[in-house]
Image 1 (cartoon, helix red, strand yellow):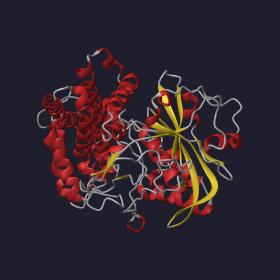
Image 2: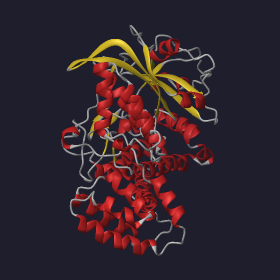
Image 3: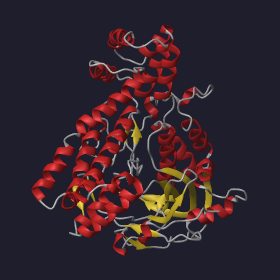
Image 4: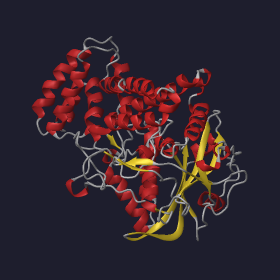
Amino acid sequence: MFPPFTLRYARLPERFYAHFEPVPVREPHLVAFNRPLAEALGFDLAAFDAEEAAVWFSGNVVPHGAEPLAQAYAGHQFGGFVPQLGDGRAVLLGEVTDRDGRLRDIQLKGAGRTPFSRGGDGRSPLGPVLREYLVSEAMHAMGIPSTRALAAVTTGERVMRGIPEPGAILTRVAASHIRVGTFQYFAARGDIDGVRELAGHVIERHYPALESRQDGERYLGLLEAVQARQAALIAKWMGVGFIHGVMNTDNTSISGETIDFGPCAFMEQYDPKMVFSSIDEGGRYAYSNQPWIAQWNLARLAETLLPLIDDDSDRAVERATELLQRFPEQYEQEWLAVMRAKLGLASEKPGDKALVETLLAAMHRGRADFTLTFRRLADVAESAAAEASLVELFERPEEIAGWLEEWRERLAQEEPGESERVQRMRLANPAFIPRNHRVQQALTAAMDENDYGPFETLLDIITHPFDDQPGREEYMRPAEPTERVFRTFCGT
């Protein structure tokens, strides 16, 4: 069933990981399977059997050619450094080459207690597995780089998270699972050779254009390349109102993908200080802080690479600092590109940033829904008659009315082409996101009633985020006061 494995990470020195066989579960049952992703990865689906698949995706049987391992890494968690974290419940089976020739990790998440579990049980409740499945697939459908969900399997066992909850295992696919924290793991031990070997592996796998550079330039180039991807990624998050919730360095992917969907959420009423994570009591990872936390995390990556950038430590710091100081400008360029697309602007004008910020301020004061504001703006671009449906989102309608005049004046500076503009706006502004209350309803039905219908319906809706989907308009609306979800949890 599985395509052939390559074992590039397993061929790195053994201090990079711990060999670990998934711990078998009592009664595996396949509850979700991503057939389009499986086909893209090269799985043989001609004789697909759900019961057999449950055995594979639970880890009860290790596929031929795999060498399961738990990866070592460290990380800053809410600003405090932990020198050893690692995969406490995840097992990397190996890598496969997909039909487009790209290398992809296949990992089982929730596969048992590993040497890095630090007292944890190594398992995952069903709720976090289904949440990650929904949100990661929604992110992919919106064009945001993300790990993806291949399968979800229930285990027939219970895990304790205050109360007994049904257990589950997620099969996760990623460009790789290498993090800023992976570099920190070796740097914290003074293992410069380990940092160098890891950097070489990352360059070969993700940034091969750097291989021709001289040593110092190669590693500075690695930092530059990771920074560019992070700037683009965070700008895309901000463009859909996504709040990650735990932007620790161990959750910052070197490949530039969104990874680890714990207490994440999509904002409804626009508030730049919005926090959903139950463990982020100080608001460190609030919506508006995400770009600057990304820069902070990149600085931690830079620290690990300093000995490779230049033998002269002062010169290495100077060169890395100069690069990191470019991040705000890089991010702003990426963010403005995202926001111009959302506003239907194809050209660049000096006042565009102020135009965006004025709209966001009006949304904040008017307590307007982030997603619907931009989606209905596309309707207004098509027909002025749609303006009433936009204005009704605002508790202070006069603010958006004044902004609309500014926006129309700006649109007048664009090349003609209304139909193309509207189409572009609708492809930049999703109609459907995984709204928190809808996600929670789907998880509750699955966990409490063994009913996966709401999960399957929501999954189908959010993987077509830009379509109008007649008959499903209720999934576009924000939560009613009694439905609101204010806190989300890691579930680890």
